[in-house]
Length: 437
Ligand SMILES: *[C@@H]1O[C@H](CO)[C@@H](O)[C@H](O)[C@H]1NC(C)=O
Ligand SMILES: *[C@@H]1O[C@H](CO)[C@@H](O)[C@H](O)[C@H]1NC(C)=O
Ligand SMILES: *[C@@H]1O[C@H](CO)[C@@H](O)[C@H](O)[C@H]1NC(C)=O
Ligand SMILES: *[C@@H]1O[C@H](CO)[C@@H](O)[C@H](O)[C@H]1NC(C)=O
Ligand SMILES: *[C@@H]1O[C@H](CO)[C@@H](O)[C@H](O)[C@H]1NC(C)=O
Ligand SMILES: *[C@@H]1O[C@H](CO)[C@@H](O)[C@H](O)[C@H]1NC(C)=O
Ligand SMILES: *[C@@H]1O[C@H](CO)[C@@H](O)[C@H](O)[C@H]1NC(C)=O
Ligand SMILES: *[C@@H]1O[C@H](CO)[C@@H](O)[C@H](O)[C@H]1NC(C)=O
Ligand SMILES: *[C@@H]1O[C@H](CO)[C@@H](O)[C@H](O)[C@H]1NC(C)=O
Image (cartoon, rainbow, N blue to C red; front, top):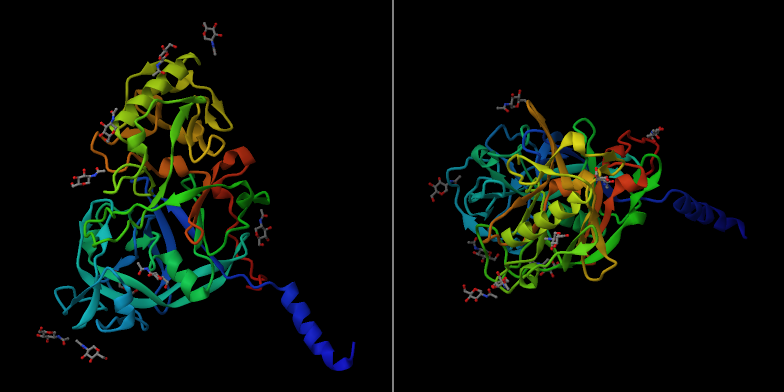
């Protein structure tokens, strides 16, 4: 090799030795009172830690702008701008009664919605700085900035029903302006994110953005290796309060084709399991539901089969505890590594060998208060008019890795990571300052 090439050679060697990762993470905590989840980010300039209610189905994020919004980097979005035109859920408005930082006449507006109470506002859209820790999938590193993050302003009453300490909502839906979508377009990283919800009140779970893996959990287990995939299904009709002509839903739907209890398929009305042209039916994944909500006929079939199968384990139902209807005395139930020993519930997808297995740790809820100590089947009856027939909720996702690969239109799921001898609370949040990110 001729001498002039040496510097170039070392330059490439360095590139090889220090891969540059542009993936992000955020801690995810469960609120004990509401059982809902909170995502922690940094917002504004100077950066301020901000807790947002995690909403998988929301199209964009919003914050309460009426309390103390101080930042040196915000600006509103002029109504006539290309950015405003690309926000397809838009309206233009004058500076109405919300004196927020985004308030200026002729500015672009959005409709922030509280998906827990189903309330909506018209409010100014806003641009400000957001930051999240970069990650190599093993630890957090330094913060990565998103300088022109688009969100919406809102007012304090819209926070009603959210976990205490939250000042807004993190929208993770399949839109062009959700948090993962903006990270993806600004950093040119894949539109994919993964959630691992923790069931521990003291140790948070984690969300990864912009990377399909690895996702390391102590002791050195890469959970991306245990994912199996099913297509994400487009629901042609959104369910938000403000619906837009021909705008499909930004929520995540998957194709559950049958449900099995201890391996035996329930007899279900197949029509209910498919999304129809009006957007009804099918299976949605939602962090707004603390427990999975089932259409009345699916609920009836599941509970009957579950009671039947657990009778074979000598389990006899006891008095129900609301909102649940099938409960067993805790002293009758054996506990295993996978939670209480009860029949398994499988959500079968596109083929018999692609199923999400729900073990006792995710199917059952322990209720211990004075005079009562029971394990209840943690599914609730959504009635005969339920829009989605299955709304897979937070409790069923705890200690499961769930990957939303929007770019490839597929969902990856691990089933319980307890089977891999780890938990979602086992991510190592100690910052690694030696990471060359
Ligand atoms: C506004 O911010 C200041 C400084 O950060 C803080 O001391 C004050 O309590 C905040 N007020 C409200 C209502 O949040
Ligand atoms: C919008 O922009 C166009 C071209 O820049 C300009 O001619 C028009 O007056 C603007 N409209 C408003 C309402 O500002
Ligand atoms: C906004 O427009 C209203 C009239 O529509 C006017 O009274 C008000 O002064 C304007 N505000 C600003 C900040 O330009
Ligand atoms: C989202 O962005 C893509 C690429 O920029 C674009 O093709 C698509 O039309 C946008 N979707 C909506 C709903 O605006
Ligand atoms: C199945 O569900 C659909 C949609 O709710 C309903 O119209 C139909 O009558 C049901 N079929 C049976 C056999 O119950
Ligand atoms: C969709 O809604 C329309 C109008 O409400 C109704 O006539 C039609 O039967 C519905 N289609 C399905 C598949 O439910
Ligand atoms: C419950 O078990 C009995 C007897 O094993 C059987 O006849 C019945 O069909 C079962 N019902 C359900 C809903 O699985
Ligand atoms: C259920 O109880 C009966 C009678 O006590 C016993 O013979 C049987 O082994 C038990 N079955 C299981 C699965 O524990
Ligand atoms: C967590 O990560 C830090 C930083 O890389 C490392 O020093 C520490 O040993 C890790 N903890 C465990 C339990 O592996």
